[in-house]
Length: 280
Figure 1 (cartoon, helix red, strand yellow):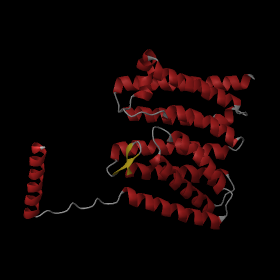
Figure 2 (figure 1 turned 90 degrees about the vertical axis):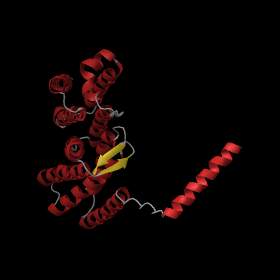
Figure 3 (figure 1 turned 30 degrees about the vertical axis):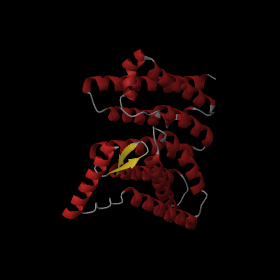
Figure 4 (figure 1 turned 180 degrees about the vertical axis):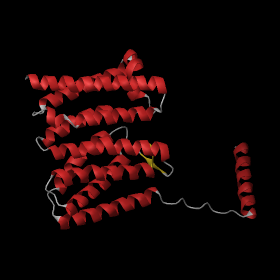
Protein backbone atom coordinates (compact mmCIF):
# COMPACT_ATOMS: atom_id res chain seq x y z
CA UNK A 1 0.00 0.00 0.00
CA UNK A 2 2.91 2.35 0.72
CA UNK A 3 4.58 1.98 -2.69
CA UNK A 4 1.50 3.03 -4.75
CA UNK A 5 0.98 6.04 -2.47
CA UNK A 6 4.61 7.10 -2.91
CA UNK A 7 4.28 6.70 -6.67
CA UNK A 8 1.07 8.75 -6.73
CA UNK A 9 2.66 11.50 -4.65
CA UNK A 10 5.68 11.57 -6.96
CA UNK A 11 3.61 11.87 -10.15
CA UNK A 12 1.27 14.48 -8.66
CA UNK A 13 4.23 16.53 -7.40
CA UNK A 14 5.88 16.43 -10.84
CA UNK A 15 2.60 17.57 -12.40
CA UNK A 16 2.35 20.50 -9.97
CA UNK A 17 5.97 21.56 -10.47
CA UNK A 18 5.57 21.40 -14.24
CA UNK A 19 2.47 23.58 -14.04
CA UNK A 20 4.25 26.19 -11.89
CA UNK A 21 7.39 26.18 -14.03
CA UNK A 22 5.41 26.76 -17.22
CA UNK A 23 3.38 29.55 -15.60
CA UNK A 24 6.60 31.27 -14.61
CA UNK A 25 7.96 30.86 -18.14
CA UNK A 26 4.69 32.26 -19.49
CA UNK A 27 4.91 35.36 -17.32
CA UNK A 28 8.56 36.10 -18.07
CA UNK A 29 8.78 35.31 -21.79
CA UNK A 30 5.15 35.73 -22.97
CA UNK A 31 5.28 32.93 -25.59
CA UNK A 32 2.37 31.96 -27.82
CA UNK A 33 -0.31 30.27 -25.64
CA UNK A 34 -0.27 27.16 -27.86
CA UNK A 35 3.45 26.67 -27.19
CA UNK A 36 2.90 26.67 -23.42
CA UNK A 37 -0.07 24.35 -23.77
CA UNK A 38 1.91 21.85 -25.87
CA UNK A 39 4.87 21.99 -23.50
CA UNK A 40 2.46 21.01 -20.72
CA UNK A 41 1.12 18.28 -22.99
CA UNK A 42 4.66 17.02 -23.62
CA UNK A 43 5.59 17.07 -19.94
CA UNK A 44 2.43 15.25 -18.88
CA UNK A 45 3.03 12.61 -21.54
CA UNK A 46 6.62 11.95 -20.54
CA UNK A 47 5.61 11.55 -16.90
CA UNK A 48 2.74 9.26 -17.92
CA UNK A 49 5.17 6.95 -19.75
CA UNK A 50 6.71 6.05 -16.39
CA UNK A 51 3.44 4.60 -15.05
CA UNK A 52 4.11 0.93 -16.02
CA UNK A 53 7.30 1.01 -13.95
CA UNK A 54 5.71 2.80 -10.97
CA UNK A 55 2.49 0.84 -10.59
CA UNK A 56 1.64 -2.84 -10.85
CA UNK A 57 -2.13 -2.33 -10.52
CA UNK A 58 -4.65 -0.07 -12.20
CA UNK A 59 -6.32 1.47 -9.13
CA UNK A 60 -3.50 3.92 -8.25
CA UNK A 61 -3.47 5.23 -11.82
CA UNK A 62 -7.26 5.63 -11.83
CA UNK A 63 -7.13 7.43 -8.48
CA UNK A 64 -4.28 9.64 -9.68
CA UNK A 65 -6.21 10.52 -12.84
CA UNK A 66 -9.23 11.47 -10.71
CA UNK A 67 -7.04 13.80 -8.61
CA UNK A 68 -5.48 15.42 -11.66
CA UNK A 69 -8.86 15.90 -13.36
CA UNK A 70 -10.23 17.47 -10.17
CA UNK A 71 -7.32 19.92 -10.13
CA UNK A 72 -7.76 20.71 -13.84
CA UNK A 73 -11.46 21.44 -13.34
CA UNK A 74 -10.62 23.65 -10.36
CA UNK A 75 -8.16 25.60 -12.53
CA UNK A 76 -10.99 26.31 -14.95
CA UNK A 77 -13.73 27.08 -12.42
CA UNK A 78 -11.87 29.07 -9.76
CA UNK A 79 -10.99 32.60 -10.89
CA UNK A 80 -8.10 32.82 -8.43
CA UNK A 81 -6.56 29.53 -9.50
CA UNK A 82 -7.08 30.38 -13.13
CA UNK A 83 -5.18 33.64 -12.75
CA UNK A 84 -2.41 31.91 -10.82
CA UNK A 85 -1.84 28.73 -12.86
CA UNK A 86 -4.77 28.15 -15.19
CA UNK A 87 -3.40 30.38 -17.96
CA UNK A 88 -1.00 27.59 -18.84
CA UNK A 89 -3.90 25.47 -20.08
CA UNK A 90 -6.63 28.05 -20.74
CA UNK A 91 -4.65 30.64 -22.68
CA UNK A 92 -5.79 29.50 -26.13
CA UNK A 93 -8.88 31.07 -27.62
CA UNK A 94 -10.59 27.87 -28.74
CA UNK A 95 -12.68 25.80 -26.36
CA UNK A 96 -10.93 22.58 -25.46
CA UNK A 97 -10.96 20.00 -22.69
CA UNK A 98 -7.87 18.33 -24.05
CA UNK A 99 -5.95 18.15 -20.76
CA UNK A 100 -8.91 16.45 -19.05
CA UNK A 101 -9.22 13.94 -21.89
CA UNK A 102 -5.47 13.37 -21.67
CA UNK A 103 -5.60 12.34 -18.00
CA UNK A 104 -8.70 10.20 -18.52
CA UNK A 105 -7.30 8.42 -21.59
CA UNK A 106 -4.01 7.64 -19.84
CA UNK A 107 -5.84 5.94 -16.96
CA UNK A 108 -8.19 4.02 -19.25
CA UNK A 109 -5.31 2.94 -21.49
CA UNK A 110 -3.31 1.72 -18.49
CA UNK A 111 -6.27 -0.39 -17.36
CA UNK A 112 -6.80 -1.81 -20.86
CA UNK A 113 -3.14 -2.58 -21.53
CA UNK A 114 -2.71 -4.37 -18.18
CA UNK A 115 0.88 -5.64 -18.10
CA UNK A 116 1.65 -5.05 -21.79
CA UNK A 117 4.11 -2.15 -21.82
CA UNK A 118 4.11 -1.85 -25.62
CA UNK A 119 0.33 -1.53 -25.87
CA UNK A 120 0.48 1.27 -23.32
CA UNK A 121 3.65 3.10 -24.32
CA UNK A 122 3.26 3.20 -28.12
CA UNK A 123 -0.16 4.96 -28.11
CA UNK A 124 1.03 7.30 -25.35
CA UNK A 125 4.24 8.07 -27.25
CA UNK A 126 2.20 8.98 -30.31
CA UNK A 127 -0.10 11.19 -28.26
CA UNK A 128 2.81 12.82 -26.44
CA UNK A 129 5.31 13.37 -29.24
CA UNK A 130 3.39 13.34 -32.51
CA UNK A 131 0.52 15.54 -31.36
CA UNK A 132 2.84 18.14 -29.82
CA UNK A 133 5.25 18.14 -32.79
CA UNK A 134 2.44 18.42 -35.32
CA UNK A 135 0.85 21.34 -33.50
CA UNK A 136 4.10 23.27 -33.07
CA UNK A 137 5.29 22.72 -36.65
CA UNK A 138 1.86 23.67 -37.95
CA UNK A 139 1.89 26.81 -35.83
CA UNK A 140 5.34 27.89 -37.02
CA UNK A 141 5.52 26.63 -40.60
CA UNK A 142 1.95 25.77 -41.59
CA UNK A 143 1.06 27.32 -44.95
CA UNK A 144 -1.26 24.83 -46.64
CA UNK A 145 -4.38 24.79 -44.48
CA UNK A 146 -7.57 22.73 -44.52
CA UNK A 147 -10.86 22.93 -42.69
CA UNK A 148 -11.63 20.71 -39.69
CA UNK A 149 -14.62 20.45 -37.32
CA UNK A 150 -12.58 22.55 -34.87
CA UNK A 151 -11.36 25.23 -37.29
CA UNK A 152 -8.23 24.85 -39.40
CA UNK A 153 -5.12 22.67 -39.41
CA UNK A 154 -2.12 22.58 -41.72
CA UNK A 155 -0.79 19.97 -44.11
CA UNK A 156 2.71 20.55 -42.71
CA UNK A 157 1.48 19.78 -39.18
CA UNK A 158 -0.30 16.61 -40.33
CA UNK A 159 2.80 15.36 -42.18
CA UNK A 160 4.89 16.00 -39.06
CA UNK A 161 2.33 14.11 -36.98
CA UNK A 162 2.57 11.10 -39.30
CA UNK A 163 6.40 11.03 -39.33
CA UNK A 164 6.67 11.24 -35.53
CA UNK A 165 3.83 8.73 -35.05
CA UNK A 166 5.54 6.32 -37.45
CA UNK A 167 8.82 6.54 -35.53
CA UNK A 168 7.03 6.32 -32.16
CA UNK A 169 5.61 2.97 -33.21
CA UNK A 170 8.41 1.57 -35.37
CA UNK A 171 11.35 2.12 -32.99
CA UNK A 172 9.79 0.51 -29.87
CA UNK A 173 8.42 -2.41 -31.90
CA UNK A 174 11.77 -3.00 -33.57
CA UNK A 175 13.91 -2.69 -30.44
CA UNK A 176 11.78 -4.25 -27.70
CA UNK A 177 9.64 -6.93 -29.38
CA UNK A 178 10.13 -9.94 -31.63
CA UNK A 179 8.13 -8.35 -34.46
CA UNK A 180 10.04 -8.59 -37.75
CA UNK A 181 11.51 -5.58 -39.54
CA UNK A 182 9.05 -5.67 -42.43
CA UNK A 183 6.07 -6.24 -40.13
CA UNK A 184 7.24 -3.41 -37.86
CA UNK A 185 7.42 -1.01 -40.82
CA UNK A 186 3.95 -2.03 -42.04
CA UNK A 187 2.39 -1.72 -38.57
CA UNK A 188 3.99 1.66 -37.91
CA UNK A 189 2.96 3.06 -41.30
CA UNK A 190 -0.64 1.87 -41.01
CA UNK A 191 -0.96 3.06 -37.42
CA UNK A 192 0.61 6.43 -38.24
CA UNK A 193 -1.67 7.06 -41.22
CA UNK A 194 -4.87 6.11 -39.42
CA UNK A 195 -4.06 8.15 -36.33
CA UNK A 196 -3.14 11.12 -38.52
CA UNK A 197 -6.68 10.95 -39.91
CA UNK A 198 -8.07 10.72 -36.38
CA UNK A 199 -6.06 13.74 -35.25
CA UNK A 200 -7.11 15.76 -38.29
CA UNK A 201 -10.82 15.13 -37.72
CA UNK A 202 -10.99 15.43 -33.91
CA UNK A 203 -12.45 18.52 -32.28
CA UNK A 204 -12.24 20.35 -28.93
CA UNK A 205 -9.34 18.29 -27.64
CA UNK A 206 -10.96 14.89 -28.25
CA UNK A 207 -7.83 13.80 -30.12
CA UNK A 208 -6.30 13.34 -26.65
CA UNK A 209 -8.92 10.65 -26.08
CA UNK A 210 -9.23 9.18 -29.59
CA UNK A 211 -5.52 8.85 -30.36
CA UNK A 212 -4.41 6.68 -27.41
CA UNK A 213 -7.54 4.55 -27.22
CA UNK A 214 -7.81 4.23 -30.99
CA UNK A 215 -4.09 3.49 -31.13
CA UNK A 216 -4.52 0.72 -28.56
CA UNK A 217 -7.32 -0.95 -30.54
CA UNK A 218 -5.48 -0.63 -33.86
CA UNK A 219 -2.13 -1.80 -32.50
CA UNK A 220 -3.74 -4.80 -30.78
CA UNK A 221 -5.31 -5.82 -34.09
CA UNK A 222 -2.26 -5.15 -36.26
CA UNK A 223 0.04 -7.21 -34.02
CA UNK A 224 -2.18 -10.25 -34.71
CA UNK A 225 -1.80 -10.01 -38.52
CA UNK A 226 0.74 -11.65 -40.81
CA UNK A 227 2.75 -9.85 -43.48
CA UNK A 228 0.17 -10.32 -46.23
CA UNK A 229 -2.69 -9.00 -44.12
CA UNK A 230 -0.57 -6.05 -42.96
CA UNK A 231 0.28 -5.19 -46.57
CA UNK A 232 -3.39 -5.19 -47.54
CA UNK A 233 -4.28 -3.08 -44.50
CA UNK A 234 -1.62 -0.52 -45.40
CA UNK A 235 -2.85 -0.36 -49.02
CA UNK A 236 -6.46 0.23 -47.93
CA UNK A 237 -5.33 2.83 -45.40
CA UNK A 238 -3.25 4.66 -48.01
CA UNK A 239 -6.25 4.77 -50.36
CA UNK A 240 -8.42 6.12 -47.56
CA UNK A 241 -5.90 8.82 -46.69
CA UNK A 242 -5.45 9.71 -50.35
CA UNK A 243 -9.20 10.05 -50.89
CA UNK A 244 -9.55 12.20 -47.78
CA UNK A 245 -6.65 14.43 -48.83
CA UNK A 246 -8.12 14.82 -52.32
CA UNK A 247 -11.41 15.99 -50.80
CA UNK A 248 -9.73 18.38 -48.38
CA UNK A 249 -7.44 19.97 -50.96
CA UNK A 250 -9.60 19.86 -54.08
CA UNK A 251 -9.25 23.08 -56.11
CA UNK A 252 -12.06 25.59 -55.98
CA UNK A 253 -14.34 25.78 -59.02
CA UNK A 254 -13.55 28.76 -61.25
CA UNK A 255 -16.06 31.57 -61.14
CA UNK A 256 -18.05 32.06 -64.36
CA UNK A 257 -16.82 34.90 -66.55
CA UNK A 258 -19.60 37.40 -67.25
CA UNK A 259 -19.66 39.35 -70.46
CA UNK A 260 -20.48 43.04 -70.52
CA UNK A 261 -23.95 42.40 -71.97
CA UNK A 262 -24.70 39.75 -69.34
CA UNK A 263 -23.69 42.15 -66.54
CA UNK A 264 -26.06 44.75 -68.01
CA UNK A 265 -28.93 42.22 -68.10
CA UNK A 266 -28.35 41.23 -64.46
CA UNK A 267 -28.20 44.88 -63.42
CA UNK A 268 -31.46 45.58 -65.27
CA UNK A 269 -33.17 42.57 -63.63
CA UNK A 270 -32.08 43.70 -60.16
CA UNK A 271 -33.41 47.21 -60.89
CA UNK A 272 -36.76 45.81 -61.95
CA UNK A 273 -37.02 43.75 -58.76
CA UNK A 274 -36.29 46.84 -56.67
CA UNK A 275 -39.00 48.82 -58.49
CA UNK A 276 -41.54 46.05 -57.92
CA UNK A 277 -40.66 45.88 -54.23
CA UNK A 278 -41.15 49.64 -53.86
CA UNK A 279 -44.53 49.49 -55.65
CA UNK A 280 -45.65 46.70 -53.32
